[in-house]
Structure formats: C-alpha cells, structure tokens
Image 1 (cartoon, rainbow, N blue to C red):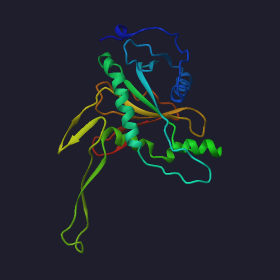
Image 2 (spheres, rainbow, N blue to C red; image 1 turned 30 degrees about the vertical axis):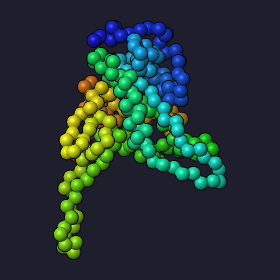
Image 3 (tube, rainbow, N blue to C red; image 1 turned 45 degrees about the vertical axis):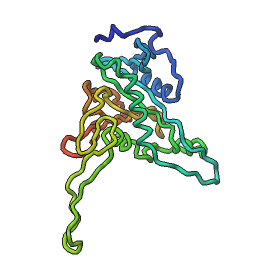
Image 4 (cartoon, helix red, strand yellow; image 1 turned 180 degrees about the horizontal axis):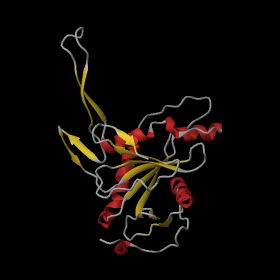
Length: 246
C-alpha cells in the first residue's frame, strides 16, 4: 500500500485542528521543530491524528490524553491508586486500532501520550513548577509495553548458609507489545514503532520522551524527536533493561 492510496488532503498544512491539551502541545512541538503536519489527513474510519513530514520522511502519529486523576482539595486527604500501567496500556491498545488499517504503508506509527497527572494538579493548585520525572513515567511505559518486571531467585536450603541468588530477570505477563502465558510467549504488536510522553517541563519548552518498540515492523529513526530536551530509550538486547540512546 502506498501513502497516496490513503492520503486525503482536506486541510491546509500546519493549520491547527487540535481538540485536546495533548494535541495542542504536540502542535507546539512540531512548529518548533519546523515539521509540517496535517490533521486527520488519511482516509478511513479510524484516522490517526497527524501525518507529519520530517526531514527523514513521513510518520503517522496518534495523540492520547490521560486526564483522569483524583480531585484534590487543599487541606484534605486524597486516596491515590497507582494504575498508570493500565492507563498506558489502554492508550496503546486504542492507538493500535487507529494504526492497524495503515500498517502496510511502511511508515513509522508513533503513539504520543499527554499525561495530565496528579502532579500537574498539584502544580496548578500551588503555582509551582514540578518536573514530571517525579513519577517513573519512562519505566511505566517500558513495563506497559513489555510486561511486568519479573525476577527468578534461588533460596538456599539453610538460610544460615548461603544467600538468595538471582537466576534471571525478564519481562513477564501483561505486556501490550508481547504476551506471556503459561510459560509461553510471543509478539502481539508490531505496528506501533514507539510510545512517547509529551510534556512541558520547567523550561516551558515542549519535549518528547520516547520508548522504541523493539518488535516494530517499521522502526522510528532516532534522528526524529531528537531536540535538546528530548529523550529516547531502546531495549538492551543483553539484559532486561532499556538504555538511553539519545
């Protein structure tokens, strides 16, 4: 399939059609990078949000907002339940539906998440600038993609003689890109090239932090989304870790 087969030019390039906070922030980022873009420019019922022109070619992007957070009241206690992995996985699964009809275009498909987290609520209430790194967001994306962090250990027969030995670490169950069940595993999502977070840290300049999908059929070049504040991570083939590559 060629991009011209699904291309539907219905809006002028770089005209804002943003409907969400995440989309507005993403358009700010694209304009700063001088990337041309079109909103919902592809044919079909599940149109991804953006078709973006970069110096290295076109990419398809879907923007998802995580907006639900506990309602905060000054001076009162609030129960916060950690469901970040599940929220990210829900966004990955939703984006996959948007990208699936275009997987034969051989273009990178990138999911960008704007996380209006509890930390943003605190920032809004107190007027403070809080770096979203306070939350382990990159690790959350890694585990949402690959599965839960799992460690196998060997416990000595006599606790007084010997120490607990770590046999291996691996990504376990409940991954969005892979699956593991009853000792068997495989790949279930090759369409999404990378999953990223967009935010505006203390500098006030939009940045994107990406985690590459090592199973993707079409890889995203590390020379896209590589501004000075941006970060990119890729799986280390020799260990159950992700390393920063840009």
